[in-house]
Image 1 (cartoon, protein in one colour):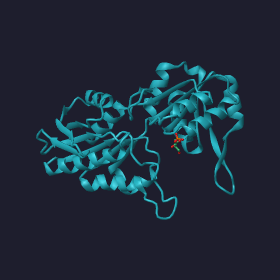
Image 2 (image 1 turned 90 degrees about the vertical axis):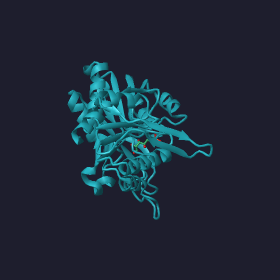
Image 3 (image 1 turned 180 degrees about the vertical axis):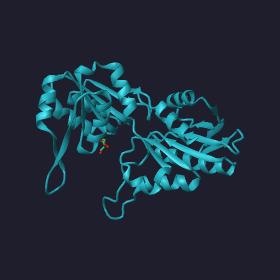
Image 4 (image 1 turned 90 degrees about the horizontal axis):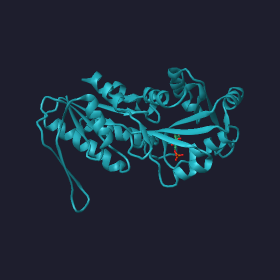
Length: 300
Ligand code: R5P
């Protein structure tokens, strides 16, 4: 097996390479004066299984194109199997035709990468798995729960901690991390305006459990899959802060942290921010490298 690390992935690329302990494929990458990319795969890949770790943020479109170029070229050069790893899957939130005529971009990205020659796509904590069901076992979503649990266990006194899900859709996932750690959890649900559908507020799913936790624990860890503008997490943290005077930690698998997002979290009363390293940012403390490496080993 060989590993090709996207030139835009440094830290996570290094960690996955160390964890997998396989030979790296050399890649020549240039950007032409007009902005177009050039790639040349230098090593012999014929008959090999090649894993490509592809970075897609902040330049999602270029990242998708890199995955397409590399998948096709690796296959043309005789690679036996191509595994594209998108630690953060681009366009994942455009997973439905919400309005007539919209592109279901998440599915189209996966289709394009598969048509270019990829045999598998591996990703972490994809926003919603449903849209990828047509690809069956070729699309592998790995939950980052073990990485989160390991980090939380190593940093906090578990007696003090409870987990919070920002919405109903995340409650099972948060519950799975809580059960790995043997700690309690609760969550919020969105209350929408019945006419406009607009989110009016967030309320605890189980008010009694919530009250018990905010009165008995000192650290709340709010975990979401993505932070982009910070609007969602800030609203939930603000609501939590109305009743909880302990420490609020906000954790995100994919930390895009668009300008202004950190400020929103601070204003909402968040004391600490953490994220995984699927996207390069200054809050990455939790690595998904071993999760990726273990998944790849099973495909070898
Ligand atoms: C929503 O369903 C997602 O899980 C995230 O909560 C959301 O995409 C985060 O976006 P933003 O930071 O812009 O609110």
